[in-house]
Image (tube, rainbow, N blue to C red):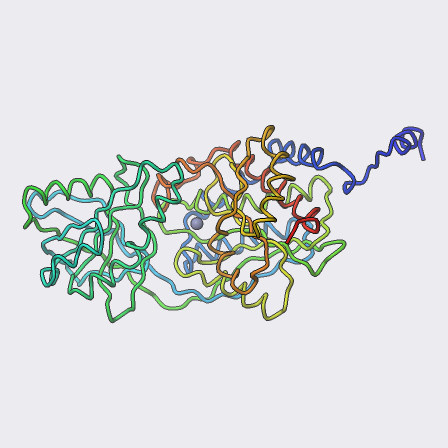
Amino acid sequence: MNKIYLALLSLGVSFSASAQSDTTMMRDIYKHALTHGQAYDDLRHLTKEIGNRIAGSPKAEQAVRWSESLMKALPFDRVYLQDVDVPYWDRGPAEKAILTESQEPLKVLALGGSVGTPKGGIEAEVIEVEYLSDLKKFGGDVYGKIVFVNKPWDESLVETGMAYGLNTSQRSRGPAEVAKLGGIAYLFRSLSSSTRDDYPHTGGTRYTQGIDSIPAMAISVVSAERLHDALQKNPKAKVFLEQQSGWKGIVPTHNVIAEWKGTEHPDQIITIGGHIDSWDVGEGAHDNGTGITGTLDAVRTLMKIGYKPKHTIRVVFYMNEENGVQGSMKYGEAAAENKETMIAAIESDAGGFAPRGFDIKASRQAVDWIQQQWKPLFEEQYWVSRFLQGSPGVDSGIWAAQFPNTVMFNFRPDPHRYFDLHHTEKDVFEAVDRRELQSGVAAIASLLYLVDSHIGEMPQ
Ligand SMILES: [Zn+2]
């Protein structure tokens, strides 16, 4: 034992990580994540070498194998693939939409899950409404027409996720409702926070195949305005639509999972991750390349600075959040079957912008406690201050039904620009800022450390 160590011991200072104060630990986490973090480089590989990766596609499976190899390069105790079957939907060749009168093209993308038009396309008059409920006024007139739901984005909301949520049900319910009234196609104004956006934003839609399947497309904001103007001038204006999308059967694929065994409570599990699949346009960079590379880098950061977790930390990359959530359903079923103890879950699926905080699914007392104990650690130095009771991420939310007592954290980066890019060709690597992404990694790693170290002190 050397003299310096003895002197430190007499001051009550220990070299062990567990005795380091939370503040010191977070300083080390931030320093490492910002200077040596690897999420950004991993993201470059995922987006540029693999690219977009809709569930069931060969590229999604390539992303699975690549993620597995990244995890195997780290000192996890176990890395494995969990079998998941997904329905594979393929867009087919580029869609066409044309204003017949002027032969002007409109920018569109088929909505995920949509069927194609009959061969050679369709041409019909258009009924424009803001809400599906407005179709009541048209009665039998919907028959044989294209229905165009043109509901503008609520620009007054800084909480863009809320603006998005206000209108997602019209995207998912639209085609089925229009089909019931005899409409032959569905055009949906893109859910975009950008008012000058000429990029269509895709997204999932739902209907019962064969019963009420009609082609459904998202139309860009600029093209929606063009169509609106044309219909103002001539309510009988026609639109031509053609697309060849459709379901291509069930494909076996995987969730990717890695476990880092806890030293004190190995059978108590903290899940961390996000979805690995993306839509089939752009590169799935913010949605959700940053979510998987960021959460993995958060765990890697704790490994690199010598932390030893008390509980088992399990990284999960879920397959097919975008078009069916089979990955998170499978994860929840398997965890319930194995009677696992899931104490907490952290999910990242809101982009890789500068971190602002976390929404928390927990009791009021627990959230109050987190605000008192943890928020001050983040707030001043790191600009992370949102710790509010709220919804979990989509994937954790799926298995929350089986594990109602799991405390769930939903990572919240700055929301201003996410829905400019979401589900479009613009969601590419270049839209992600390295410093913002790595600061998010640090915030997530800090939260993971605090959960692992102090969850026993948290009120139920
Ligand atoms: Zn997502």
